[in-house]
Image (cartoon, rainbow, N blue to C red; front, side, top):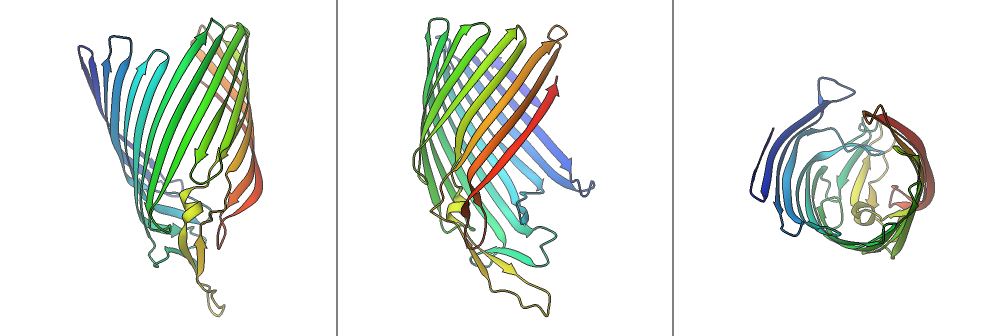
Length: 326
């Protein structure tokens, strides 16, 4: 349900939504169900810019997840958010806040649940998680003639988490600086390149480059090739986790002692090198759009969850393709 209206330079919209889907294993049970509330406002400025604000709440009633290697359920999450933007030609300033609240039991995989019980360090299996993310970003674009454009930006992010499955309340700060350039010497070819320099509380500074070649042999048909390097810092849980794994074996097999599972402060970020080739074309006088892509990702310094703490050093390759039309 949506209600929207405007008054002079001021626009607003109120909305409510409901989502639900059934479980694959039991079509009579919900895998996910939620109610969504959102408010969005916009004020148009005289210089061609605008101010906008949006916020809302997503409250699930059922949630069959999160699925990991050994766990099938980790509580029901609720998400609240707010987003503010000042936008004008060639410049924007954006800020957002996300709040996540998760509560409920931790349930092991059905194949393991007769033998495995996961708790926090005090023997409690119900999870209590509250986390907040605060982010602010500014970007300025500069045009040099008709063929070249540069974008320079900065963003700062502050993350907090309170989790009874980690050692204590923790915070994280990230500062990123990025630069991107676009050069289009002819209508057929466009080159895009850039890099991001990031500082993080957990890891040493990283530089993430990215480059693309866009080829448009005829109007409405575009090929894009992209190579990029990125990094995934260790999560709060991988760094500061503190919980117990209780294994109970059927008699007469003796059960092992309690296993303490902790995080590790020695982890490095995972490195991801990605390659992608994409095609997009319009047909039937712009009534039909076809998109297809193939990709390959190589992950190194892979973080693997083990007891008594995560280990690192593995690799993984992810590859595939997709095709769609609309």
